[in-house]
Length: 173
Image (cartoon, rainbow, N blue to C red; front, side, top):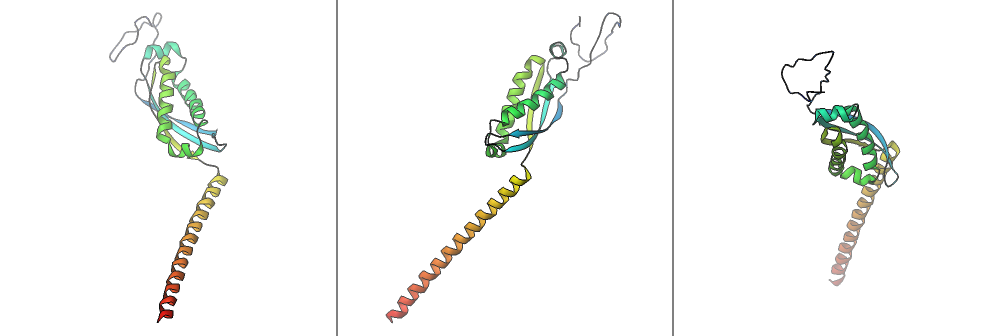
């Protein structure tokens, strides 16, 4: 690349002397395939995400890494596994925005020498194993039933107090 990076317009290339590579500088997005991740509290979840990035420096992108797009995709997969492996299931479900921000900053820092700028990362889905979903639903149902029993017991207690007070009132007359 003797002339360096070029902008829009017409350029003359001598095929026997010069070579060129066309680089798209627009923001590109890709899906991170679902990753099976073991959380900090030993729960296996499947998580997938979307990464938005662009080539910020075409010359560095061509000279420092063979395929910037593919390398960014592979790095996104490993970064997702590494970051979520340090989180509990509750954190994964509640702190998606913090996870996305941490992943974006980590990826952006790692891809900077490649001439790549990671614009945004979004965690799309956190899927729990089916048996864990059933267990959580059963736990929620049991909690609701226990709450209903407590409310019913409090109602019966109030009713018995009212009956006792009524009996005392009737007994005094």
